[in-house]
Length: 65
Image (cartoon, rainbow, N blue to C red; front, side, top):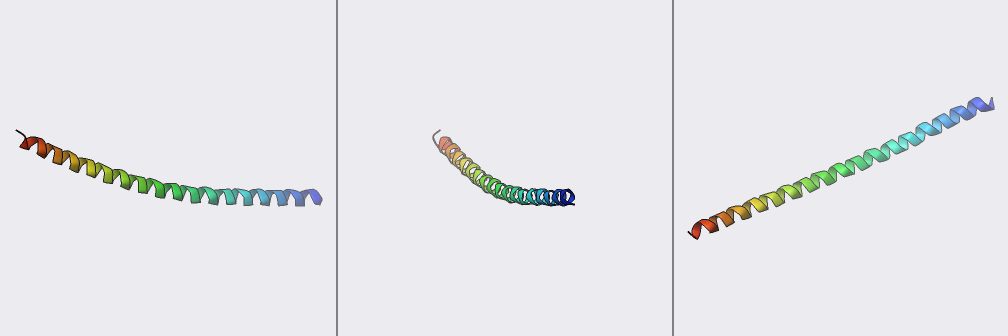
């Protein structure tokens, strides 16, 4: 009777450990998603600034002729 109980206990503990690890992976994936979103917004803002600066530079070059 000892061995079946030990096997059931170890099986339950294994499933519990996998559950905890799964939750940790889910939390880290959410955090990574938020970082990707934030970085994408920063890149888009920088691209808009660069486009605006290029437009201003083109206007300045047109005025020099």
